[in-house]
Image: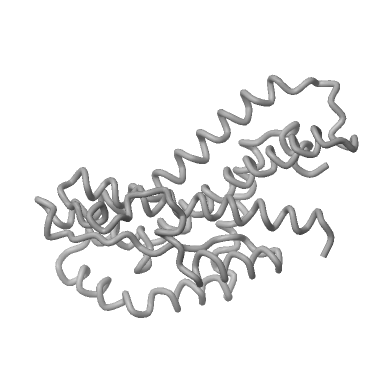
Length: 229
């Protein structure tokens, strides 16, 4: 395994970790604003990564996916939410669910704006292929920013799929009649298996391709040159 691959994996894991931790914290903050202090009382409204690590979802799965070159995703320990503290539990869960993907989208777009402004300060005469510590550091930084954009977009779209326990199922549940809500709750125990099956069968390949193309468009040619030279 060469140093470039190791660096790429490391940057990918940093981006994934930032995206999933902020995703979960956003759930907790929205719940707090709606009257549920459960996450705050349990010390989960923190950016301290140790409070959110799930050994499988935060470490093992992203590492394996990074090594085999598959689209990266993962999960942190879910932030505890008690919908009984909401004035309207179903509406509260809808807003809490949307807070996670919404934060990922905001992070992706914010990173694009920051990166493009930073690009304006990079001299046009800079040769990304030149071997120097400064250039290597710059390309690594833009690679990290680029991964933050694509991974946050990917996690936002993935989590909006209406299959339990993904956030999209909470959104769909809000609009369903009582019987539909019961069905969604009954699917909760099988949700992870269903999502894995969709991955394995390639049902989501078109979605991933669309996200990648959107990320490429948002980054632009010069950014991509800095990332991949």
